[in-house]
Length: 178
Image 1 (tube, one colour):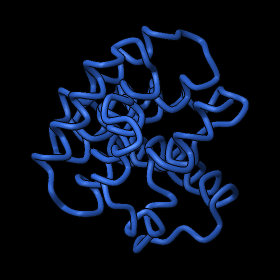
Image 2 (cartoon, rainbow, N blue to C red):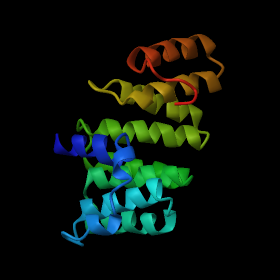
Image 3 (spheres, helix red, strand yellow):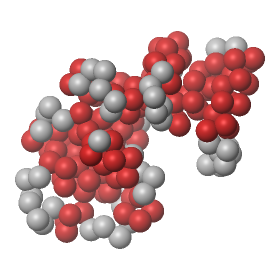
């Protein structure tokens, strides 16, 4: 449960508007070897401060300090995706899934894997992965978007329209600008 809250509120960025005030160096002062503090500092550097090289190095350091953490592996995969390294993101998400197969937190990895597969042009794989992510009790909203995009890419327009309708049912404020 703690892992899910951490990802929801820090690592996957819905609260990053508030994190802009976080100084990555300050975040690591309490324990400079704490993998989660290092991870958060890296995410802030990459996504908020626009310092991708320094932030990526911290994320890789966090992964090296705790290679068996699904949270860290999933977040590292997100950073790969954010930087446009889709194949690395796919591999990292697959690694994260192998760390704790079937756990409730796996939905994060599945959703991210589908997004990375879609970004890499692996549309059929992305659709299958996105549909698997939607089978979870609390699917990530972005999985709905990925599935809709996959259907559209595959020119399965009726299914794409239905997927968009399902997406808007769970994310009614979604627009193209969102």
